[in-house]
Length: 412
Image 1: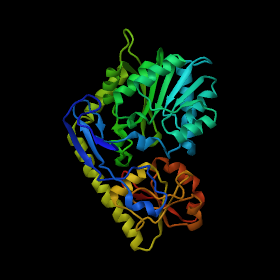
Image 2: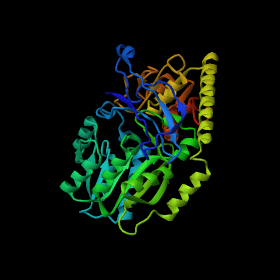
Image 3: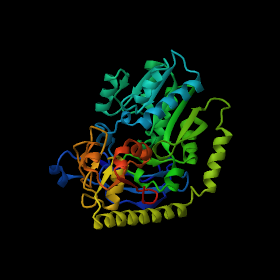
Image 4: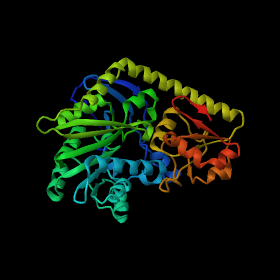
C-alpha cells in the first residue's frame, strides 16, 4: 500500500488531534518529472497538518510509503556552501564536547552523501553512515565513507551495536521528521549509544515555523514539526534525557538536541525544561495559535499570486531560483505554474532537465539566469537567499531583482 492514514498521534497515542492547515492534494515534493509524457499520471496525496493537544507534536497523519519517498532520492547535501560550513562547525562542536579520539565511533543516521561524516573523519574518529537511499548510499561509499544501506530503527540500532560496539555519538540531521515510528527510531538511538554517549538530532524548529510562516516546509516527507516540549515527551518514552539544546540558523531555523541515555540519576537539564515552559507561554499548545497561522498562510498566498500577476500584467519577465521540496509545496498551494513562472534554475544536477511536481515548471541550469536576465527572480530556496543573492551578483548588477516569498512577499 503506497499511502495510509494514521488515527493517533505518533508522539503519545492520543486519538483527538486538531487539524489546522489544509494545503490540498499535493504531489510528492521530490517526485520531479522526467518528461511531459509523465504529467497525466502524476499522483497526489492529501497534505493536512494536525496539532496533538496532549503532547504538542505537530504532524501529518497521511503517510506515504517510505520505499516510494526515500529509496531513490534526489536531495544531496553536498551542493550548498552554507551546509558545508555548517557541517564543519557541527563536527568540531561534537568532537570537542565528547572529547572524541581515534577509537570512538560516530554514526550518522540518514547520512546522505557522507558530507557531514567526512568532517568527522578529518578529526580522526571512526565513522559509519546509515542511509536508506540506494543511489545516495552508493555515492557516499564511492567517496570513501563506509555506509550501510538500510532504514534505521530500534532493531537496526541493536544490531549495529553488536557488530560495531557502542557509539559515542549517534547523529541525525533533518531525519527525525521523516520517520513514521518516531519513538521506535529514538529507541534505536538509545540501543546504539554508549552510556557516556550522546544522541544529537537537528530538526527544523516549530517556533521558526510559526513565527516565519514557514508553511512550505510542510511536505509528505516531513511527518513531524518539533517543539522542545514535544521532544522532551518523546525522549522520556525512549529512555533518553535532553541535556542541551542549541538554536542553529540552518534550514530556516533549527534546533540541535543533545540527549543522553537515562542512566541512574540523570535528568533533563533545567535550562531545557525552562525552554519548554517558555513555549507554553507562547501558545505552542493552543489550537487558536495554529488557526491564526492558517489564516496568515491564506493571506500570504493571496499576496504572492497578486504580486506575480501584477508583474506579468506590467510586462515584467519572471523566473525562479531553486527547485527545493519546500518550493514545490508553495507553488502547488498557491496554484503557480508556467503562466506566472515559466522556468526555474537549480544547482543540483539531478534536478536540471526535469519538471517540478504538480506545477510542471522546467528546471534549467543556473547559468540561464544571466543568459536570459529576467526582471524578477522568485527565490523558492529562501533559506539560502543570502548565499543565492551573493552568487548572482552579475544578475543583480544588471538590474535584476529578487522576490522573497516568506513570511510576506517582498521585492529586494
